[in-house]
Length: 430
Image 1 (cartoon, rainbow, N blue to C red):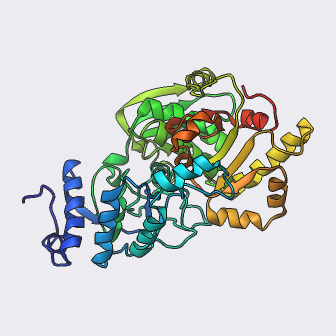
Image 2 (image 1 turned 180 degrees about the horizontal axis):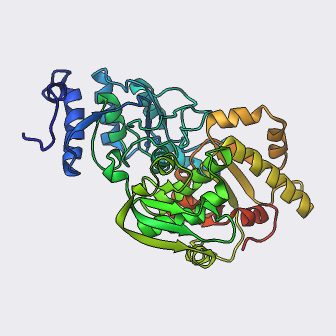
Image 3 (image 1 turned 60 degrees about the vertical axis):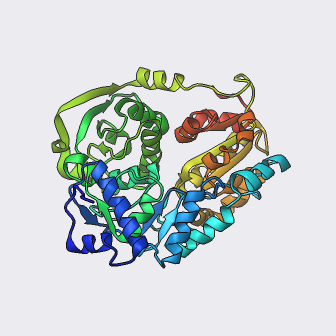
């Protein structure tokens, strides 16, 4: 079979079976994938630690489990290990009824234990490696600027590309693992200099710092899969990628990636490539999008309310999709406690679950704030709320969230941060 891209002797050798039939299949899959997108070659993965999007053992994914067994039988694994997206269930901290448990354990995620054993066999780093925010210091899967990755998970990829200046395309499940196993990925799209140039100029002209999730949503829906170069946001975030700025960009980027398909954005005066290369990153014929207060409000008001009773109260609140940073977890705990005091309450009015990476959660549990949080009745988990809401029974539960990603992929209702606090404290969100 003839392939379009130019392969090195080493790569051809792998393709021709010099490292076994299974490795040849892995290489062939990557080459065919690259050919579809016009890749001219394969390039080495320079950040060896991968990140996988598929973390859940859904029983219907039989081809996935067979492929994993074939990799294990051949003795193949990711050279640098990998992190993976969050687990789908945590009965201790995200309680559910007997019928929900039956659906989760016997129908939806019936192969969870088997799949996690397979993940461990092919290179899963450790039991604390389940998080969509693998790039946080508490998890430690942090690429350097210019590193080539083999990752999937839209919010992690857009963060790595934009905030860290690494290079990765929006891969799907299994392609992420295959690239980590063979050590090469197709060279196209966001791996190339040309593919990282912006075809949209976005001007933020709001009177105050925009809600990260709404701003990201607006840009994602407008530019879809293109690269935006954003002006005016640095006046709210400053010119240094400190904890506050990176937390904001984490949520902003997740919204661009889920409400659109953005894999890279540049923030003028702030993100690494924008600071280094400036407007040379913008294509001459770039489109223009102006975002002012009215435009943000229009986007926010466009979100559908998909609860069975749109006027009814929330029964469950999820905060942390993507997972919260340590600073965000501290901030939300203080804000929830303050909102309850203002409302004259000791306990949350709505079952409230905060989500953070295992390392972030363990760090937080060592502080007095953890006791203050749990005293309110709120709980802390490391699951993926999106995977939790995949249970069809949850569609009858009115879920509130401040995550545009969760809103997009479920029937959860989006609330701005201040409105979420009102819901949690027994008031009404707007």
